[in-house]
Image (cartoon, rainbow, N blue to C red):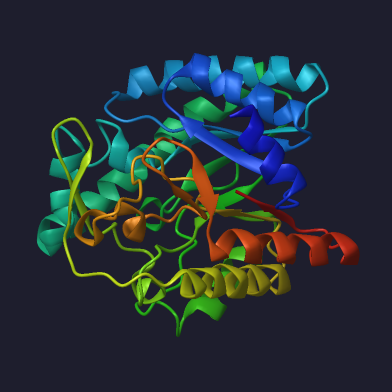
Length: 314
């Protein structure tokens, strides 16, 4: 991890990194290594399967850890969770993520569930944000999804994990971006990118075309895919330019490496085709750069030379 973070800083010329996870000790270690590498740290608990009380406790623990790091001199932004309505019990109906995801195939139930979830999210953050601020003295945001319709009044930064532009939203994307940026607070696109197969940019916001076994290991690609690293590279750089021109405060490419989707010598099981990582993970766990890595590095060099003020990160 230390080595990868140095690459992100020195070769990609990024100035910030968003690190997510649901194990505090690992999160804190990663954040410390990122700060050691000279990166601004966006500390982002991202949990799955907790209830609201468990999530609250996790977020407050994270805020204390983030504050320790900030007081030691690191530049730290604290994101008070990510996509909590989908991954936490008590906002949308369903005992687990699979049941909550099933709502999207039932429009009538979804229409009934969304207003209730939005009210619950607002009530939750009305409690959480003041408690976080008692523990953390830096800027506070939250990595949201559109269905939550977050009340941004308590936050310093507006942030969205729905930073993807694809065939479903490309026509409205410029206006959507202008509206997001024009809310009177810094706006961050905390997640965007696309997979490595031909046509991936048209379905960038969709789930990866791969199935997993009960242990979370990739077992099958769900479509015949053709590798298109140049297409992935173009998508990332084009959207970076649009975000920078649109006045976005920070953008986070998803992601450096999808280690759960390694490449293989078998085209039918080359899971890297379904990966959004900008490096190709090899079977032994090492990685090799993709075209998107080189394009991002070139963009970073040019941006550093022009002294642009927008954060660009992975």
